[in-house]
Length: 319
Image (cartoon, rainbow, N blue to C red; front, side, top):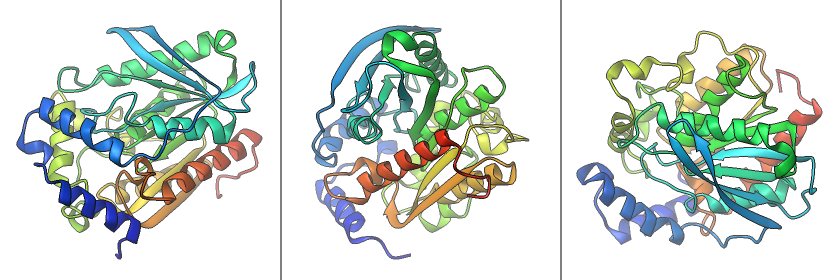
């Protein structure tokens, strides 16, 4: 598969910067390297109507929360989205995906809440998931104070955050989480076994490597048995019927491409309305590279359009 010129340029920038693979050093070193690199990839952060920083209570202690109100969002009854950042459950923070959250807020005229959920290996599964669940419950229980419509809350995330969002959608179906209207999954992890063929096709030389992804996973799980838990591998859930409509965005040159495609197919087979969008020449993480990749904002715009369609009930399960 041919790389998009923009994706190739980002890979060249990364190679020129040097640095060792995350798995060859400590977690602290990986976080420091990531925090130094992502500002060079993100585009300018758009102004939003308002930003709120606060802490909420979670089962494992306080959770820092950043809430953006988009330009044009109503002061009450606004649609809202819980956004869970990517980073392999090990890296990432409130700043690393702030560009995406601001885009979502402004393009949708919505309120976007992003928690600084606990990271592995200090806090292994299910700590990060529990922080995400606590945030979703906070949004539903404090909808009036946040100026949002409790009946118009969705979940979203990329990579490991897409994994957490997909799992929250499963929990919501079983009434273990508040109701949601949509799930926006951007190149999500759906199968911790990491055996799909895209791990072979794109395992090295396309940004996120198979070795790095295994390093992330092994920091997140407590034991190998966790890899079969549907709260880590939602693709292994026996039944997906009844979950919220899904927008699934995939990069074609990504080790996670096949499991993302498989998850979208299973959702469709279960009668769930799905919009699957693929960017064939892009690599994993491209939506966080808006400074160099125009397709990043395009993907967010398409996610917003899908979310609006789902809210209006305009799509059938075959869409």
